[in-house]
Length: 245
Image (cartoon, rainbow, N blue to C red; front, side, top):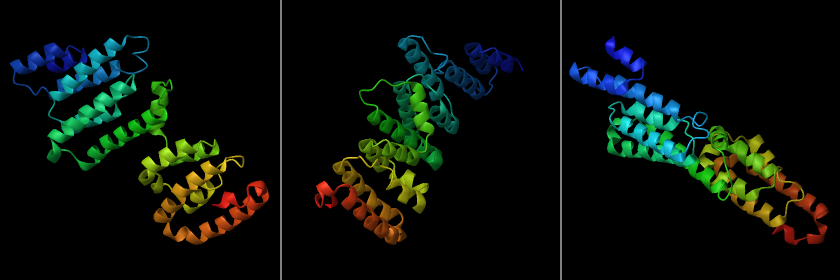
């Protein structure tokens, strides 16, 4: 009871000392301290504070997590923590990966995949926002988004490089939500005014991948190709027949 009161009052140093004195399990103290540090590192609580404050708290959090024996809790904390910067997020995820590498046989496969998934998403976000000012809110929104939906949105906006980056880096994830209807709709997403080199670059990547993911879509693609060719002959007659190459 005394230990729980110390933990509740966030007196973690005293709680650890008390646990050691009476041979009590220190894990509840570390868990409570980690939860407290994650809360203090919240991007909405760190707003306006110095980067040094974030670095100091993050270092303290990793030190605390490093003391824990509950590996599952450590990894879950690293993956789910909302931190004030993508730099801090990357540091904590890399810490989680190091923990996994040091405890491979003790870590469940789904937790290993969670860390890999989060790092992969973060790398994609970094590539997409290179040279652009971003906020942690935009990262958290991207982290929660369905990638296939982001691909469709990029195509609708005529942003082929973004669509290609998302599709090629996350095709396995996209394929889980890809139906024949969504696939055929994706072929119609690009604006009619889109330049042909961009259209062809998208189709050169998407069509072979689509046949791999949904092999029985070939008859539907053939119908679409005939329709698209006829439409190009009408709408791009000044560029005909080069546009079909």
